[in-house]
Image (cartoon, rainbow, N blue to C red):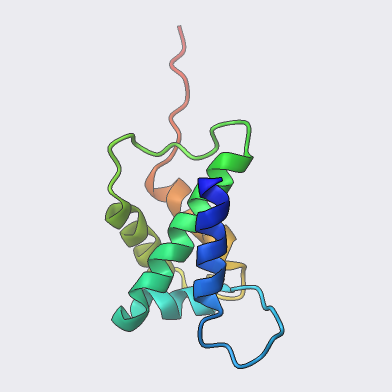
Length: 114
């Protein structure tokens, strides 16, 4: 239930200033814009946290290996840094960029061999 609420909140935040009723997917260019401007900080944070929360609640295997003591600001900063350093990915969907950024910053460790 919480995941659905966060996802809906993030989606509504994205549409806050839209003058059209047509729904559009958020791409990497829009994500970069949101995460670069301090005025849009709440939208960036809501989008990133919503994507991570929904993805984590919808997958059966632990694809995301986030530390238990992870601060949400650290998570959002990881996405901001990734977006800044990968402008060539702007045409891709924002949610896929968020997941790549999180995976790069917090990679899953391979199980130790005996």
